[in-house]
Image (tube, rainbow, N blue to C red):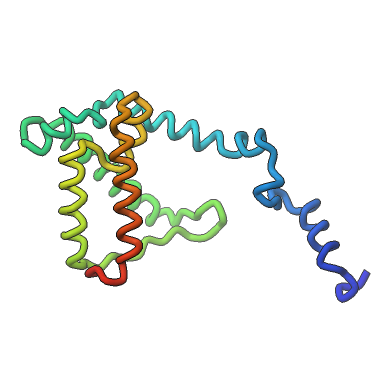
Length: 170
């Protein structure tokens, strides 16, 4: 069969039958969706458990940090920063590729005054609510239902930023 005689339907059928994972979202069964996303669910549960057990979701630990009364949170954050620095250096040195085969590259960032303003707002929200974005879900999962208000506030803040981004200093 020549290429010019192939219809769009025939091409779509061939792609559907011969290219793995080439389904539209409505064509997946619930089991396939769950199976494909289970690794993310497991990673999220593991991450949430680590956050809970290390007490970084505790409002009291966060208040201790902001009042300079305890080293606990600084130790956790410092460990994360050091781990990130080492990981990025390993990625750069070994020229690691992403799953799609592209070389992972990290562009240098330019300082902008909006980062100071945004960092101040983030820290203020963190100090008031006792939650930054990652632990919000762990707090909700641990039964701190009032954190749902914090989640909605965070979503609202992201929406407001997206709406007025073009007018903000960058």
